[in-house]
Length: 124
Image (cartoon, rainbow, N blue to C red; front, side, top):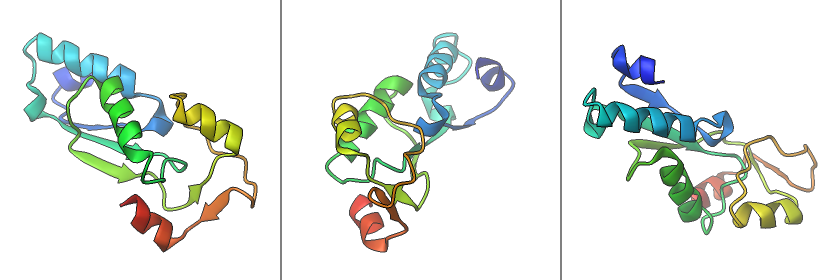
């Protein structure tokens, strides 16, 4: 990532599912400290994962993303996919306590919400 910024990349695409927030944040901070770029020179995009759709969880998830990126803001926040999942209760509890969850949950009809416009409205 550091090499990409030094070579002129200014759009940086991240996501919880990519597991690259910390690495991107470190590279960006290093380039800022070296005077290669200012934060305002970059456009940072990231995404909410498919189980992070509950409106009460979004502020916590966004705070964690910003902390991992070592940034005060992102330029674009997307929903990674329009198919949403609930996590099993034990996994959801761990996730609420701060354990990142970036894999695809077991395809269990009990937890799969699929595409549901009302859930997406709640998220947005």
